[in-house]
Each structure stands twice: as structure tokens, then as C-alpha cells.
Length: 184
Image (tube, rainbow, N blue to C red; front, side):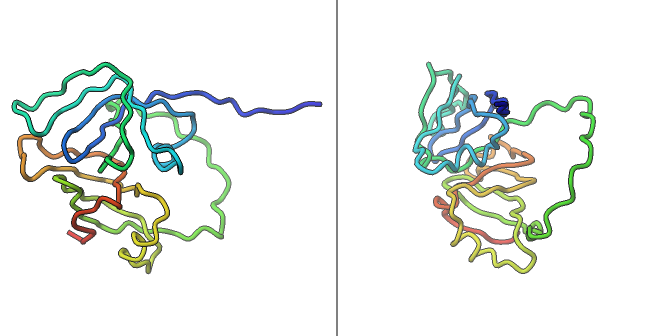
């Protein structure tokens, strides 16, 4: 009897995690091909395991990342924002062959500009909604704590020395919204 098994491999992904009091950088281990959004939205998992952690205490000066012995376990409810650290630009990867046509049952989504405040951070980006979807209703009915934003910028208005971080994709904890969402 022949059984086929999908190969399971672990990926080490560099991430940045933002909380109300510190920023952490490190790596997480996830099974491939699970996406970051799936990894942090796993029901019943209260902690994210961060390897090779470095922390920046937002209450101390000068602002610097300090290495800590790891791994560290960060309570998912304390996370305001999390994103993968973008890889340096390299040569373009060969494009994959075209797959099957998308399912006709899938509802097409369109980008909707969003600006939100989470703790001391301001995040702007695009949330994909059905064409006539209501942003407030979508967030109120979300069944996962972290929602994806694309083409995102993250800033901390009270600390302009941190600059503006631009990432292609980030996850925001909608349960921790202080103000938002509003179109810019």
C-alpha cells in the first residue's frame, strides 16, 4: 500500500514584534508552508516563541537593541504589530508556472487604505475587503486577532528618531486598536 506524505520542513523567519513598551527582533520557527498570519493566529496558542531575541526598551535612552538569552516567550495578547523582516533585494526569482484558474466561489477583494493607532504606534497600509465591504463591520466580525495590512508603514509619533518603517506586509492586533481604522 503506497501512501504519499507531504514533506514537512521548518523555516526560520526573522521577525520584528512591537508592544506598547518595547520592540523585539529575532526569529521564529514555523512549519513550511504555513504563513506568518496562520502562525500567529493559531487558536489556543497564547505565546510566540522568539529565538535569538534582541529587545529595544522604548522607555530608555539611547534606543538600542540589547541581546537577551533566548528563546523568549511573548504573550500574543501583548503584541500590537508583527512583521517579517524583509530580505535584502536580490536577483528576481524565476516565476512559477501558471497554476489553475482561481475558484469562481472566491469573493474578490480590493485594497482599502487604513490608518490605525496601536499603543504608541501609527500604522498605515491596505486591508483587503470585498468590493462593497464595510471596514468597521469587517473588523468587528474578524475571527482572528491579527489582520494583515499590505504596503504598510509603521511610525511612532512620540519618537521620530525611530523613523518610519516600511514593510510589504504586516499583521496588526485589531483587539488592541486605540484609534482606528480611518482612511488617511
